[in-house]
Image (cartoon, rainbow, N blue to C red; front, side, top):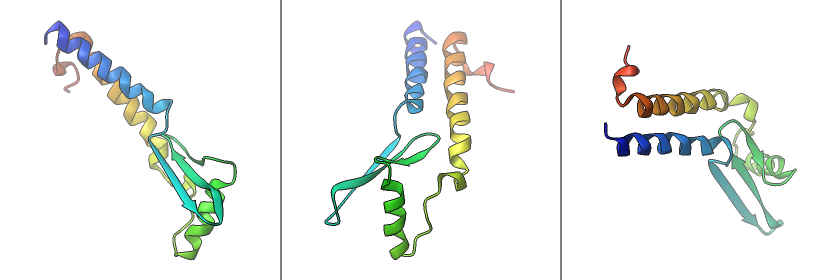
Length: 106
């Protein structure tokens, strides 16, 4: 691995760390009964409404079409995703430091 490739690998690994600071997905809904709109932000380890009551309002709307309520506690991926991304970041940095993937092979 050249020095340029090592630097790019380290930068790419560190950029993955941004998922811990910013939402991965944002949902904005507009409807006549909600003139300001309602929304939801999905982060690596949580789901929350953009405003205080937004998630509750979205769950109320979803009830009318037969969807189950969105309850972040019931989504196991929200518990394991930080660990997966942490592993990807650490392994990417290890590859950047040692210069090859054989460090990670068992």
